[in-house]
Picture (tube, rainbow, N blue to C red):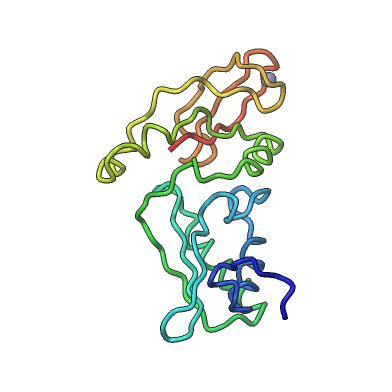
Length: 186
Ligand SMILES: [Zn+2]
């Protein structure tokens, strides 16, 4: 007799997969170490391949971001340390990553770190569009300026299209005068 009748996801019946999820949830983003690759929506799946290896599915963020090889390396190190081998990392490009996949917790962590999280309900229009239109989403979206992550003022101006990385734009708060990175909606 069991005490739980709740259905479980198929992969949670495999202890190694559950362990791998736990290990990988702790892998930080190499560029923004206060958030994990899971929280950013980069880690998509962990599954058992037909040959028995663990298969970790990741989706790159912006194509211009050079961090993906570092992320694959970090995943490998985490799994090897946890003796979860053999494994391989599969990069999946469709559906394309979007800032909508960033969790609410991660948005708060970004703000606390001094990076304005993406504004707007930016996924609503995009997700109702035909899938083939997604490849055209490098077209900048007209969205309200982000609020200052330090003082909360909405009185901000853009200084540069690209901040510390191509993923971010550089803004300045017109009230507290502090410059800050804005994680651009995508
Ligand atoms: Zn401010």
